Image (cartoon, rainbow, N blue to C red; front, side):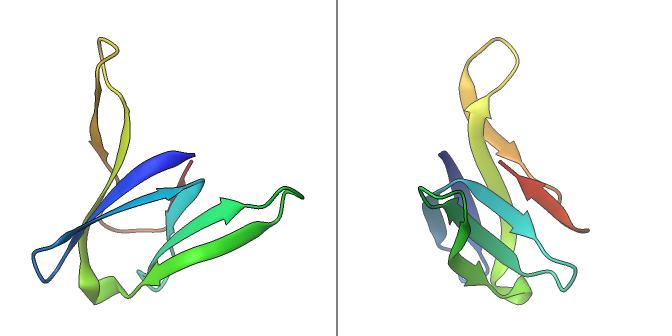
Length: 79
């Protein structure tokens, strides 16, 4: 599991615990978890225009945890 922070267009932040986050070809942000059988289940989908930035909480240089920004365009997955 990982923690993702989404900065939303309305000024709010959403913290979500998920196994993966991704950006689809249409720009949607999807958050998924894997069930005990290894199947991906979608937790939440955000329309492209509602999300301004996505971050994953993980260790940075030096081992301290911080918010690592994810790409703002293109298709990607982060685990």
